[in-house]
Image (cartoon, rainbow, N blue to C red; front, side, top):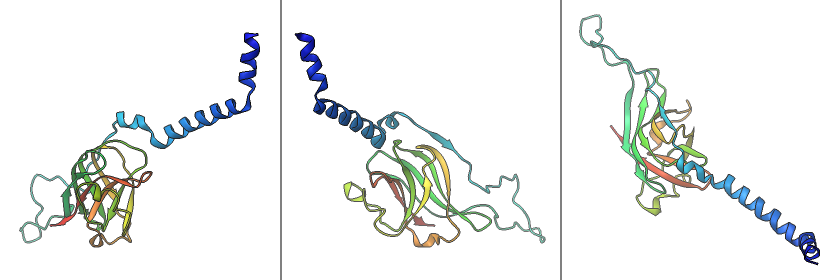
Amino acid sequence: MGSGRRKAFLTRPWIITVLVVAVAGVGFGLYWFQPWKLWQDETVQEALPGAVVTSAPPTGQSGTPSPPTGPRTLAGGELISHEHATSGSVRLVELADGSHVVRLENLDTSNGPDLRVLLTDAPVTEGRGGWHVFDDGEYVSLGKLKGNKGSQNYVLPDDVDPARYTSVSIWCDRFDVSFGAAELARV
């Protein structure tokens, strides 16, 4: 008689449906939130493109030093924390060929799903009020974050005028929240 009850219990369609929905829900939750990334760090160390190292300054035809031909910092700032503890600095750099890169230096933040680097016109505000503003105005996604630690370069598309943007955000595109951001102060 005991095995008859077990057989009836397992054949009820609602129990099987609940189990299938529960397993699917757990699978979707794991995919969407990717909690294991909180324990996985990815360090990327890139050199600044076009950096020229010389032992003596270059000289012009008259024997006087020539102006530097390497990268030139146009703006920079320090990252502040938003959704996750974030530190490091950001520089907007013009390279010798006239192209521009956003450089993250000594970045240290949490890893997460679908993290991107945004160049934006939004003001950087501390606290929860600053978490969700970076996709409200004008912004350019410079691509996926290469690593949650280290120093990295993100090339600006040729048609982007860097003077129109005032901040950089480490942005979680999946949850529309900033992990951290920096105001770009012109130098």
